Image (cartoon, rainbow, N blue to C red; front, side, top):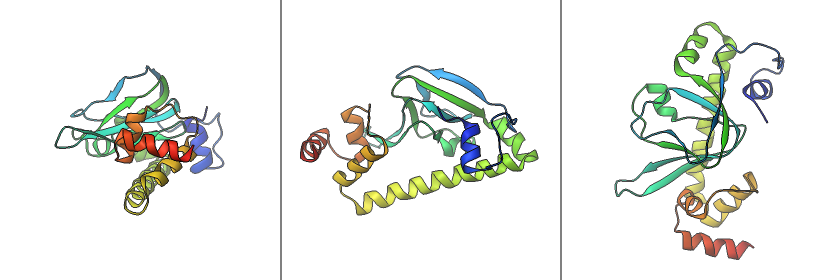
Length: 187
């Protein structure tokens, strides 16, 4: 189970050790399957690090249809990031797709850490860079790759998927029937 401390050691500061103190308060929490972690219109107050489980971030189109923006797997930071940064109402919803374990950092604790800690600032920058790269790559994929290619890449990232077919189809921007055809074709 990869933790925030291991993430820091791998991506931020190779000299950081497991026994070192984090520059912010971090709480661990169990989140049951199907729990809404962040609701539409709620102001995001936490950044989460996923220790185990799968979460999805989705939004509603004007016609009321849900679109899945992203799935997050263990070893990833997630939140309603725009809301976390701006302290405005979230236009996305975050849900646990299975039982999850997370480490969480409050917005206020992170802001305090930014004032005093180079490590916290480096972590914040690297997490923001990861978000940006992930979002940019997803946009490029939608413009340049077929649904089959995007589905194959999702399987590569997470081969032992536990994501329902209808959610995977919403993530790919296709109908469940189209996903069924793709799955049969690549089997």
